Image (cartoon, rainbow, N blue to C red):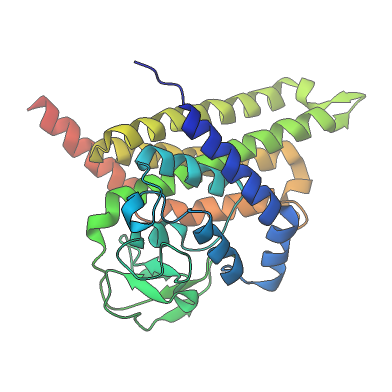
Length: 298
């Protein structure tokens, strides 16, 4: 059995990374933060034109006809770039909500773990709702994930597993990016006449980040192949941990500089905190895994 990415998957990764580097690099990210605009409609349409949202639709319906494994590769790159917006909901709505596949319609979804809806004020539709509900804005820790509290329950439960897996892929991309940021900083920053990466404490932080990210990568990729609910729960659990703890350890490697607004590390941490509470929380994932283990041993 070959566990290596296929040529199609490698080319897809490279293409998406190039697209996002050219269209949503660091300057664009910082501009979004300064302007407080999470959804750039023009960028959303460009993503639609590139097939981002229609990746899994059949070619006969204007899609690309790829699978869940390829979608995970694409979302991993989006997480790496900290691309904001309701990417998961719009992707899942392709073929269901008119305009979602082409990026002309922005679709969000109910937070199935609570009363919050992300990007409600910027969305044209809510997945599983006949019409966008009203909601009260609440302050979000992530400047690019606005939140609203709604009173009506959502009906997007049938999308829960795939939504959790794609969110895990976003977390994975962020975790891998913080490993890169920490390693680059450790090589370039010097103290006492040598790079700080030469010190054992910093080495241990970076090594721990890498191990968690790689374990999460294996879990996310495996769940994308099997589509098993328990494996998806495990992938979300591991990816959330890799993203949150990785960003926190990256802050430690950066020292006081990491906590400043000028650095990007805090943006990874804030986004990871928010994503960890979306689609499937750690508590819910643990319950599902426990139930699966009990069922297997019965």
